[in-house]
Length: 196
Image 1 (spheres, rainbow, N blue to C red):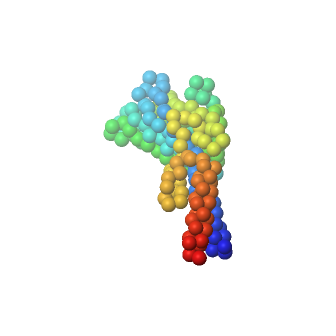
Image 2: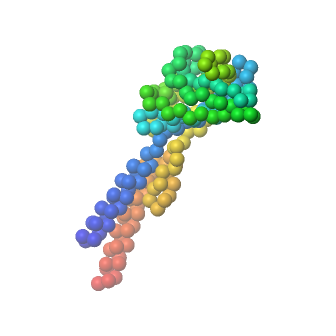
Image 3: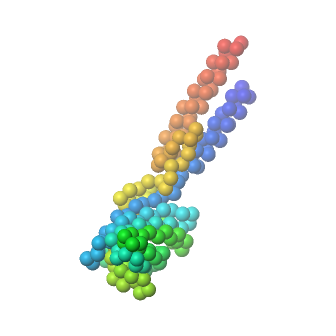
């Protein structure tokens, strides 16, 4: 009986570790649209990063070898407000494409993904000039990203045996582990019984 309880405790520890690893960072992908006659389009991916947010922007359609400022603003692309977070500038290559990653620590993912902010890039750098690409950041729901084009965990979390837990419910994981524990207990009792 003591071996069975030790086995049960071990399974409970593994279940707790799997549930903790299944809680991954929230993320949302925005489609950056061309504005004001530009041809600049791409994506902006916002990912929860500790108490902040990582913003990864990839754009194409710029003039070759040019530099462009970006920001998170209050409001929407349709009803624009002031700058709240500067993003790293994008330097377009010879084909007019470029990217920039910015980790923002003064605002959380929840604060940025409240339906009252947008990402915008501009025609130039210092000064930024007119806007060329814009995307609204949708409001996030509890436990999910902002409901943009795609909403998924930043990376699959490893569960027991290396199984992927890509956004699955921790309750479903716990239920599965309970079934495993009951099956293991029954198997152990059968082995003990046949050994007598």
